[in-house]
Length: 303
Image 1 (cartoon, helix red, strand yellow):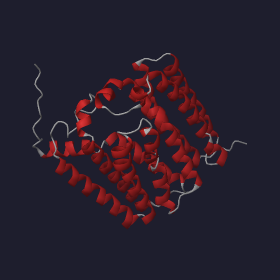
Image 2 (image 1 turned 90 degrees about the vertical axis):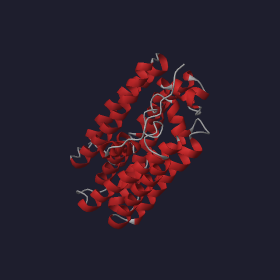
Image 3 (image 1 turned 180 degrees about the vertical axis):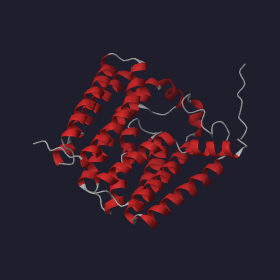
C-alpha cells in the first residue's frame, strides 16, 4: 500500500516567496510580457516612451501572474492528478486557497492600477478583459466542457501584442490584430503537441482534451493543418508592410521547420517528437516576433 504524503506549508520567507512565485507560472508570463513588449515597439516608428513601456510591462506581467494564480486555484484538484502539475504549491498543500486568492487579488489589483495611472484606461480595460477571458471563461467554462477549449480560449493568450500596442498608442491598429492572429493560430499546434505526449495525464484529469475525445490520429492531423494555417497567417505582416525582407526570410525558415515537425507528428508520431515540437514552438514564436522587431528598425524593403 502506498501512502500519500501531504507536504507541510513552507515556513521560511524565501520558501514562501518561491511558492507564491510558482503560482504565477513565470515562464508563461515571461512569454506573455515579451509579446506585449514587441507590440509596444512595433506600434511606433520611433522608440516608445519609456515610462508607459515600463509601467505597461510590469502591469501586464502582474495581471498575467494573477490570472495564472487563479487558474492554479481553480484547477488544484486536477493538477494533483497530473505528473506535470502535481508539484505546484496548491496540490502540495504549501499554500491555502485563501492565501492564493488574496495574493492574486493584490497582484492583479496593483497591475491594473499601474495601467490605469501610468498607461491609459484602454490598456487597463483590455488587460482586465484578458484576465477574465483566461481565469474565468477559459479555466472555468471552456477547459472542462469542450475539446475546442484551447482554440476558443486561445483568444486570451493572443491578446498581449494588442495590450502592448494599446499601451503606446491608446488605440488598437490593424497590425496589432495581425499579431493577435499569429498567436491565435500558433496556440493549437503548440498546445496539442503537449497534449499528445501528456495524453495519459489528461486522461486521468478528466479534461476533454482533443487527444482524449477525438483520438491521437485526429489530433495529429489537426496539429499539421493548424501549422499550415499558422504559416499562412505569418505572411500577413509582409502583405501590410509591417514586415520586410528580414522578417520574410525568418518566417519562411521558421515555418519550414515547424511544418516539418508537424508533418512528422502526423505521419511518424513519437512522444519524443511531440515533446521536441512543443519546445520548438516556444522558440518559434520568440524568434518570429524578434525578427519582426529587428525588421521594424532595420527595415529592408522587398523591392
